[in-house]
Length: 176
Length: 80
Image (tube, one colour):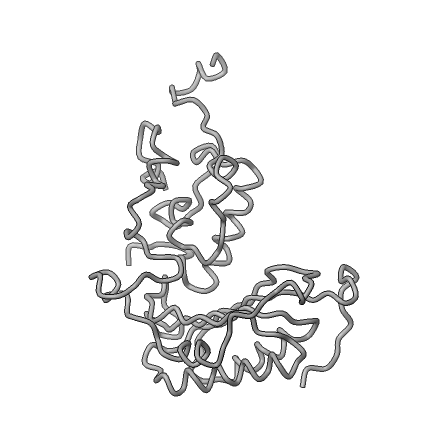
């Protein structure tokens, strides 16, 4: 298991850090394998003294660029509390998982009081995260609910482009 | 106003959108929002064009960098 590492001098004793890990699985991964990968990561987090706050499956999305010869991938999002060394262990395990083509962790917050954070993860919601959400096409054609952050053209209610760039004489985007 | 006289006339400086609206959170996961701050080549749009304040421009840059790492946004858009 994760060897205990010294924390940072910025750490306040008794507080913990909040991390977000996203990993991308090959697009043809079965939900069984996704479930196994999720369970593995959950086990690592819990064994390493962390606490899982949120697990999401963003479904099969188009990648902005090719990753390991894949143009699409299944995004899994983990939000958890943990201490020094936990991320290393999580990423080591992701690295060993064949279906994972990319992983990335950010520190969302530090010196978090664990008691103030509630976990939204239940066994049921955790099981649901192994089922890839609807495909991008399904969302585009309106056959499925919106994703966490919706997708490009959906909203319409608030035209950000106009709000931000509205008054500019020439189109900014052609100046690249 | 007079400072602008040498330059091509542009509209008055806009306030930073993120300062004006607290509900607008800069998040690397929200690629739909971030794409308004990159050009069609995938480069960051400068602050003088977006009107962002320095603080929020940094936050945008950081969020875009993160989004690129997990393939939510492109590093570069080539003609390929």
